[in-house]
Image (cartoon, one colour):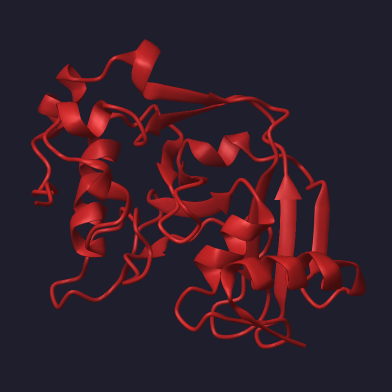
Length: 218
């Protein structure tokens, strides 16, 4: 039996937060990995937060839906997703087709370290259970998890985002940053910024795709 109801009021979430147990501190030396599209209808940069949403596939988008359920633009509701490894990022970004297309929309790989410690609500521990949910918060219907994200952000605007389990990479950790305040945690420049079709990524991507049973193109 699953347990992922609609979230309680923000005041309930505030009352149940144990900061010494429920907040993950991501140190400045931690490497975060992201794959993004530099071209197409919605081109991005390596440090671009997305302020339009919620998107159907984006688990923790906090933007309010329009009257007809369509995405809206909210300048104070930026979101940015990272993996802790290339495999997690590949698994998440290309999950719809299981095909890693290295050319269409000019995908890039970025690896960066935050400029300050990031403080994230830990969804992998007991916090979901204490507030009436479960680990399904990282795997359940997106419309419900987005409602939880909005409630969490309303309750804890001081937090930079969420630490959660990747549903596509065996529960390995993933990060969702919200801006504000997460934007101030990004560095001036990344450690690695390469087009996905870069020859140096041939072998790493081939290994990842073999592990995931994804198809590598390009």
